[in-house]
Structures are given as structure tokens and as C-alpha cells.
Image 1 (cartoon, rainbow, N blue to C red):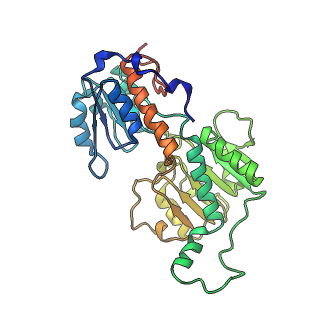
Image 2 (image 1 turned 180 degrees about the vertical axis):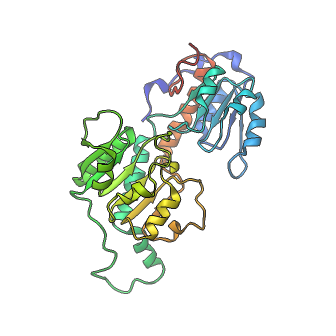
Image 3 (image 1 turned 120 degrees about the vertical axis):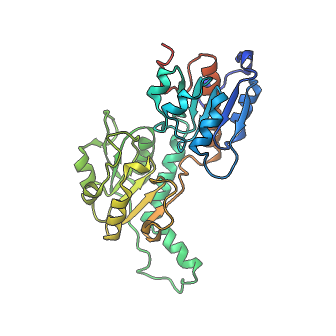
Length: 337
């Protein structure tokens, strides 16, 4: 899982970084913290319950040379301009839509992310959501927990076989391809996809064909102006009524109130969401009360190996930027040009 460029010797680190301060906006696995501290950096970690507020982040960033940020942190131009010592922001995620990259580049602040290391973990989670929904595992398990299991029922909890079904992928990047391999090789599913680039896997189709043809549609795109709110009531209505929808990408890609309306109308065999908008989802959402919907709290990368790799990678981004070296995960590589 670890790429060779991650294993840099601490002897190469610049000793002038000794008293420089790094802010970590939530607790992460300690291997990345140790890398920073072994390089002579002073690390401050936000350890209070819940995400750091924007106002607190604005204040704490003022004397920092580096920030390890989460997707929930708003790193906008105001914050960047009010952090005069800031040299690098390393996002603990692949996505970086929470960061004003253009403003960072203008201010000569490097931006890093964690590409590659969380591909398999996120694809595994998407697969887990799909299997859970297709075989109605959650309602079946709750039936047992509630003492309602009386006898073997020939009509009980009838699921949907995946064999030979059509898998649609919206955004066939690393994670989309990893899920596609699991589904096509493991379950004999037929793959169609809608993506900007040409891919060798499956069949590329237009967006409307993807919606109308997919038995399972899994979303793996970044959040952009084009994808924000793309899965609205009109587009959700084009999907098969008994299809399964999975989203492990960004919550904002789906208009939640429109999804809620479609589910309440009886649309979809199942919906699996690891991301929502907002996060956390309202506890009063009717989606949480529907047995055809399964929501997890953004755990796509949540296995020890992946989170350890992410922790190391964000630390390496920080140290590389402070040494004016190429970041392992470089979002704005032209920042020093």
C-alpha cells in the first residue's frame, strides 16, 4: 500500500524547521505525528469533541507554517491570508474541495492530499454497502435482534442477485475501477461507465444511458461545479425503480431532499450512503427510518492500514513543502514556479 516515495530519511530534513508549528485539526493515527516531531516540528492537535470551528481554526492557524486539515475544514482565502507563516496545507483526504487552491497558489502555499492510499478501502466499503443492500442484511439482522425470528421463511428478506446485472460507475477513477474489478470478477456483472477520460474497462456510455441502464449505480466522482447536485429529482427518476444507488464520493453530488422524496415514493431497491450533505445527516431524516437505506458515517477509508498510510502521507507532504521539495500528494505543483 505504501509507495516508495513515502520512506524518506529524517536525516534529510532541514534543521531550520526546529521551532516551526504544525496544526492538526483532528486526531489522527500517531505515526504521522511522530514523523513531524522527529523532524523537529512542534505539533498542536485539536482534541476537543467535534470538528474545530472556523473561528477557532482561523485563530489557531495564525502562527502555523503547516496545517493538516480534514474535509470538514474550510480553508478559504480569508484564512490563508490571515496565516502569514503558512507554507503548506495537507488535506487528510483525496478530495480537496474544502480548500481554495487558487488562493493558496497565489500566496505561494503548497496544497497536498492523499491520493492512491485509500483506493481499496473505499472500494471495499462500497462493495460492503452493495452486498448489505442486495441481500437485506440489516433488516434481517434487526429481525433477529428484535426477537421476531420465528421460523425459516421462504418469502422472508428476498434480496437481489448481483450475478449478470449491470453495474454503472459514475467516475471511473482509481476507486471506481477498484469496485468495478470486485463486481465484474467476483460477481460477473457487466460494466458500463460515464467518465471524462477513456478507460479500457467496460463500456463508456452517456449519462442518461448510465441512469436508465444500471441495475447498480455507484458514484465515484470528485465534487465540482458540474457534479454538485447532479443527482437531482429529475435524474434520480430516470434510474430503474428497483436499482441500487451507492455513494462513497461526496454527499453534495446527490440532492438529499430529492433522494428522500424518491425513496418515499417507493423508488430504489436500496440506497447506500457513506457521504451525505450535510454531514452529519439530520437524525430526523426519513432516509434513516427506511429499511431500504443504509447510511454510514463517512468511513470509506476507515481501516488501520489505510489511515496509517494517510497519516504518513500528510506528514510527508508537510515536510516536503517546508523543504521546497515535491510533495508526494501535490495538488498545486506549479505553486513555486
